[in-house]
Image 1 (cartoon, rainbow, N blue to C red):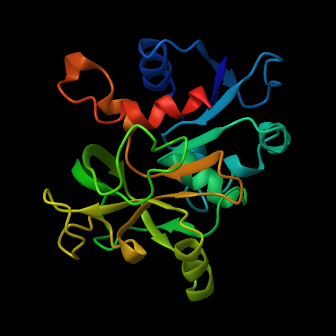
Image 2 (tube, rainbow, N blue to C red):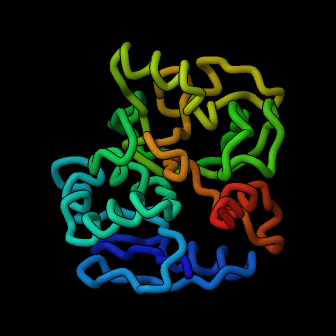
Length: 224
């Protein structure tokens, strides 16, 4: 069972459950003050505006009681996926390196973007081939990924960058970078390869009736 953690201010938890169940997973929302169900086989930290993004996106939710259980689950090999606000929570909680901060435009941006698959040899990207271009929506005001030089070099050396923003043809350009993220980074792995965070929303590109199912491959990573 995939536990979709609901924080005060989450607004994509229902979307996540709908997308996961459409893929055949059992999924349910779990309030952040409650324990994770014993049958939990995966954890998703969904998008939204936890605690109204006070201090900074994800900072307060990262200190929620459930995050201790999430860390214990990671130690047991349970996969964790953070999306948008969930990605911010993951970084703030130290599950992944770096930070997500205010967009270069200083505006909230809601649009479709293209991503190039940088590493297809992970459970979150194995549905794609390296170099594939997929289209996913973004909806964030603090999506710019930042990390120091040493951390960035480590991500590259360890092949932990999953996706980069690109144009429709897969070119990595400044113009294709919607928020100013360092190196056009859109998604990364944590120290544990079962942990991933990304700013774009795969759950919003998973239902056939929406006309785009490019995100299904990311969510299928919960199969292990």
